[in-house]
Image (cartoon, rainbow, N blue to C red; front, side, top):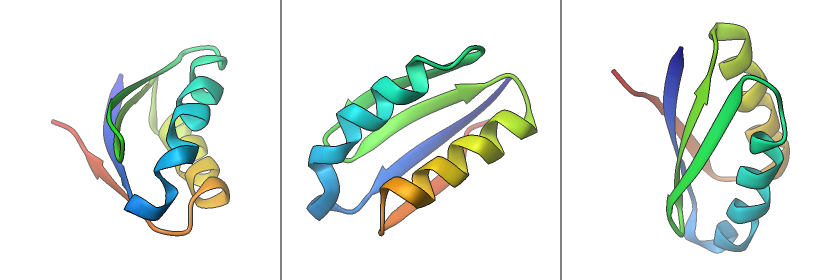
Length: 69
């Protein structure tokens, strides 16, 4: 399992809940919204995290993904 923290720019806070819902509909992935601009994302492996990263790039203009140890 791999986990990452997603932080988005404040201007895009209204998109985060829908993004989290989209990730939760995928098999072997889980997302949890921490606050208006932060979410915890979990996937089975590197491919899952890479897919989440590509989705984040599509959804958000200003975002940062930080691996969680």
